[in-house]
Image 1 (cartoon, helix red, strand yellow):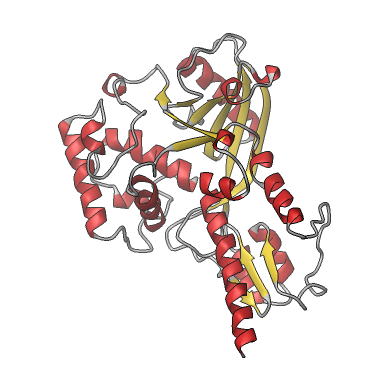
Image 2 (cartoon, rainbow, N blue to C red):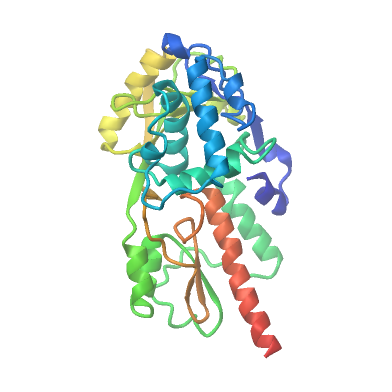
Length: 355
C-alpha cells in the first residue's frame, strides 16, 4: 500500500504499521500466542510463536520448507484445506484459517491453494517488512480514488464522474482501459467480445459485512486492531478501534467489526457480532450503529477458477482484481492489474510506432 500511496504524493502519515493482538478471551492453549510477531518468517517465525507446542512448530516449519522447495506451487484444483491437511488444529485455527479468510475471503475448504501459496510467498516469505500490517489513518476514499483523481487532473486528464456508460461503441476508436467490476465489464463487452464477457460473467462472488458498534464504555486497547476468534456463531475476524485511527470526536468508542466470507443476512450477522463483542471483548452495553454488507466484495478464488485475461480485443484491455493474475481479490491485485493493462497498451503503441 505504501508504494502506491507514495507514488501519489502521500507521506507515511497516511498509514501506520502496528502490532496485532488477540482478544482476551482465548483458550488456554492460545493465551500466550504472540500476534505482534510476523505470522511467520519461514526461517524463524515458527520457533517464536508462543502458545504452540513443539509439534506445532515443527509441523508448520516443515510445511513451510516444503512449500519453498516446491517454489510455492500447487495443483490448480487443490484447496487450502487439502494443502494443509496434516497441520495441527492450533496452527490451522491461529494461522491458516484467519490468513486464508482475510486474503481470499473464503474458508480453507473453498479457497485455491495455488493463490494462497502466492500470498504466503510474497507477504510472509518476502523478507523483512513483507508481513507488516498497515492500517490507514484516513478514509479509503481519500487514500485511494480521490488521490488518483487529483493526480490524473494534474496531468491533464478529464475525469467524468456520475456517468453510467451504456456502450463502448463511441470509445473504441482510441485505446480503452476497462476498469470496473467484473459484472459491469461483462455487460459492456457482451456484444463486442462475447467469449470474454461470458468468462467474466461466470465468476461468483463472496460477501464482507462490517458492523459499526458503539462500545458505550472507554476502550483501552494496546493496538487499534484486535484479532477475534471466529466461528459460525461469532462471524467477525477483526475489530478496529476507529477512535485510534481518526481524530474525529464522533468516532471515539466506535468499533468496526469485520466479518469476511459473510454468509448470513444483515440482521443475523449484526446480532451475532453484538454477542461476539460482549463475550470476546467484554462490551456488554455495545449497540449497533450501522451494518454495511458488501454482497459482491470479492470474486470467489476457488480451485480451478478461470479468470478473464487482461487483453479483451483490439484497443481494449481490462483491469481489476478479478483479471487473470497471481493474487486474490485484493488492492494489491487490482493495482498490479492496472499496471499490467497500461503496459499492454504501451507496448502495443510502441510496436505501431516502430512499424
